[in-house]
Length: 560
Image (cartoon, one colour):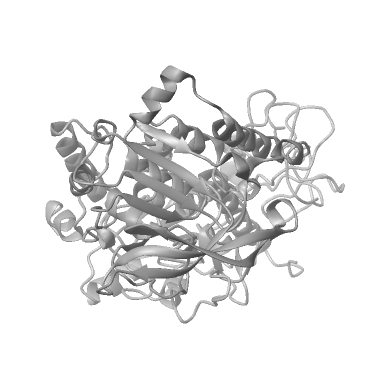
C-alpha cells in the first residue's frame, strides 16, 4: 500500500485496471494487438491473476474510479481478468511519454544471462519505457542453458537466442560478461548501485544419489556429461570413458533421453550439429552399443515428453527394447489421464507390444545398437571392478508403487538385482547453490525463499527461474516464471516500494569497483566477435559453429 500523499516513483505511466482514459486524454487505439506480449486481440483483454481498483495515472490518481478486473481493454466487450500491462502500448506514445517523464529512470540489475535472466529483462524493458537493465554473467558468453544445455541436435530450440539478442541490443540494456557475482562483486554492492536486483543464475550443481561407489571412475552426473558435449568450459576436460558396451542412465527425463540419443546417434548426424569437436572425436571412438534408462517408478510416472521419446524410437541404427510386461493393463489406467500423458503412454505401449514382420525382424536383428527403459528400480550401490578403481555395474532395489499417477511413491520390495555396465550417468536433477551470504537460501529445496519472485525479507531483491522455483520445466515454463517476477518488479515500481527518487549509478558504480579489483567485463559487442569466430570455424568444418570452450581463448580473441 502507498502512503497518503506519497508520489509514485516510477516511469510506469498507466496501470490498466479497466477501460477508459484520463479526462481530456485520447482513448486507447482500437484494433491491432495488445503490446503485453500475450497477443490478445480486440475485444479481449490480457489475462491476469487478480483484480485491480480501476485505471490510475502515473501520479496515482484514480481515472475511472470503478473496481474492475485489471486488463488492457481495447475495444468493447466485457473485461476479463488479465495480466497487468503497466504502460499499455495501446495508449499513444505521446501520452505515455508525458506521463512517464515525471519520474526518473529505474536502474535494474539481472544476475545471470540464461533464459530466466533474459526473459526477466525483456518483460521489464517492454512494459516500462524508462527502465534500464544491466545483465551480469560469470562466463564471457551469454545464454546459459540455451547454449550449454539444449541438445546439439535440437537447433530449433536455440532460436530463442535471436529474441535474447534483440533484447541485449536495446539501448536500455547492457550485458557484462566475465563477472562473477559473489566473488568479483557482492550482492550488497549491486543493491547499492541499482534500485532492484534480480537473481536469475540458475542451477550450477547436480543432485547426488548418496550411495556407495558414486565417486568411482565411470560414474558421471548428467549435468557434467551434457556440459562436456555442449562446450561448457568447466566440463571441457571431463574425458568420459566410453570403452564399454553397456551404459546405464539413471532417470526418466528429457535430459536422460538426450544423453541416450547422443551416445547412440550416427556420427553423420552429429557432425552437422554444434557439438564440440573433442566430444565428436570421443564419440567416434565409443564402444557403447547398448543404453538402459532406469527409474524408480513406472511408465505412468516418466518425466520425458513424447517428442523426445519419438526421436529415440525413430533413431536410425538403433532398436528400442521395452518389456511388454511393464505395460500390461495400462490401457485402462490411462483412460482418464491428461491428453499428453495418454499419448505418451500409448506410444510406449505400441513400441513395446508391436511385433515386426519377418523382413523387419531380420533387419532389426542386424541393428548394432539398442536402448531400453527399465522401471521400478532404485540404485543402491555402484559396484566396483576387482581392483576397486572403476564401476562394473549397479545393484538395484526392485520397487512397488503406492498411490496413483504422479503422486505414486516407489517402495522397495526387498528384492535386488545387479545390472552390468561400464558407464553410469546420473540424471536425477540439477540444484542451485547459494550465491552470497547476504541472500537467504533454502538448502533443503535448493531455492531462494520468495513470494512471487520477491526474496523473503530483503526488499529490492528478486529471483526468477530455477533458483526461484527449482530445476523443473522447459524454456516456456521459465519464460512465464520470469515474466511473473518481472511483473512483481513493475508493480513495486508502480506502488512506490522501490524508491527511484534517489538516483543510482548502476554500472557506473559497479564498473569502478570491478576496475579496482582487476576485473574487465565482456560487452555484448565483444560476445558478437566471439560468436563470429565460432561461426567461421564451424563453417570451415561444415557445422553451424565450433564452440570455443576455453574462457582464456575467448578473452584473447577480443583483446582482453
